[in-house]
Amino acid sequence: MEKEKLVGLSRHEYAPIIRTKTEQLLKSLLKKHNPKTCLEIGTFLGYSASCILNECNCTLTTVEKDAQNYADAKENLKEFSSRVEIVHADAMDFLKQNTKKFDFVFLDGAKGQYYKYLPYLKDCLNAGGVLMADDVLFYGLVSAEKVLHKHRSIAMHLRLFLQNLQNDVDFKTTIYDFEDGVSVSEKRQEKV
Ligand SMILES: C[S@@+](CC[C@H](N)C(=O)[O-])C[C@H]1O[C@@H](n2cnc3c(N)ncnc32)[C@H](O)[C@@H]1O
Image (cartoon, rainbow, N blue to C red; front, side, top):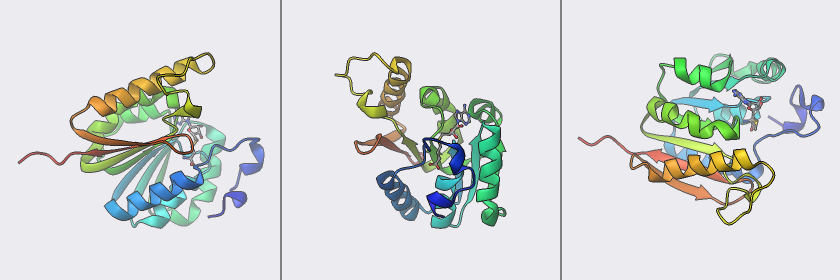
């Protein structure tokens, strides 16, 4: 799918769509882990969802709270309709009610909420599954040395998210310092 041809793109002055290196990392992780069930938080117009659906033969649940984005994503993802469920909901409401398990999660919704989503995402991730979170370094503001003025709350909550991930013995986490920062956390296999 070409970004320029996305239905709904012209409505946005700035389109917060996955960037090139992050897209490459997403695709390489999908190739490596070959997930059967994927979850995305933050659909926007459906571009990253199309990357996931093109890259592997999985089913995808993708959650979007904005009504117009949801409608546009439905159009953009028509060709994948048998494998994608687009949920029009607030991510936290969805996560609280969800009972499905996933092999791969792409987290790309409200950055200041990531730390609140984490326990729910951990619960719904299968052992050996992967949680990939975009924008975790947020314009470099998450770095501990930065003095925060603008976006203080988002940056503090992202710091907390990364600390919780890194302190969690059930996850093996790598943080990539390119574009807006990406974390990749592999949930350890259960002990036998
Ligand atoms: C960065 S964009 C997603 C981009 C998309 N993953 C891509 O790369 O093509 C974030 C999206 O999350 C949605 N969003 C923000 N807060 C949300 C929430 N609380 N629940 C669900 N979706 C939310 C926004 O409306 C926006 O469409």
